[in-house]
Length: 102
Image 1: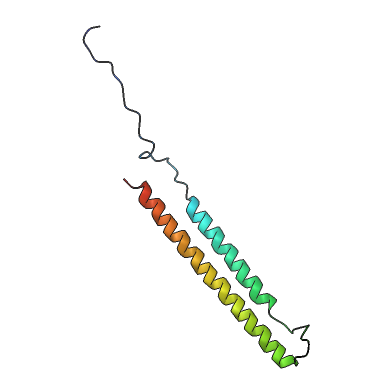
Image 2 (image 1 turned 90 degrees about the horizontal axis):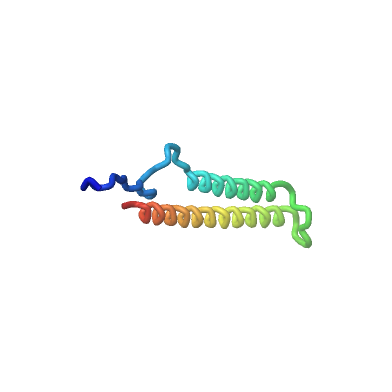
């Protein structure tokens, strides 16, 4: 040996290096969830439209009002569930971003 130190370069840290093309997986998952809830809401509201077929002993007007009330309650439940899922997705994304931050 001539007294010189061997030359070596440290490996780049995978956590700090970024690929040239960032993948936006969360964005696509979020948009897919939004699309599913939108389809569910539109399908549920459209299924309540029209004249009720099986009213039993109720007259037509009362049966139609009951169906409209049920459709509104169902749409409200879907919207509340949609909001809850969005909050959960947002909080989990914030936790993920904070965990990856240096």
